[in-house]
Length: 118
Image (cartoon, rainbow, N blue to C red; front, side):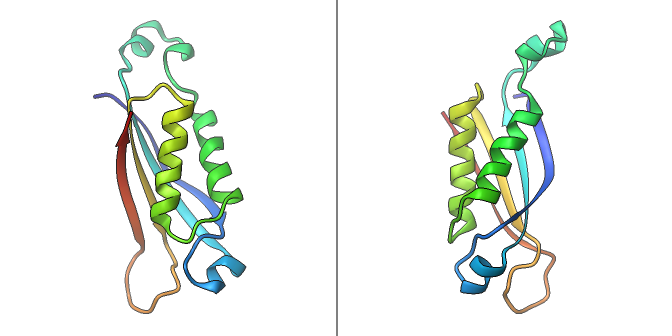
């Protein structure tokens, strides 16, 4: 299956199970794979045979910056659902990463990844 990939989209949101996350907010990174047949787009060179990446970015930005979830699992699930509803894609991979969660220890980041289909 072909893919449209959007990597490391960075947003500031207020998601988390701890009160300080909901009050102070933090940075979230979102990666997407929109899995669909891109042959028509590749052979015709027409945007109407593909998906506008800017439109996808705006949908994700709206979800991360203007909604609140306790768990990034719920954020990822809602992003996947919204993408499958608004765009003609049969399958999406959504990865949500918290680079700086308020938990002790040494690590690069924490995150979730899920794949959903129609």
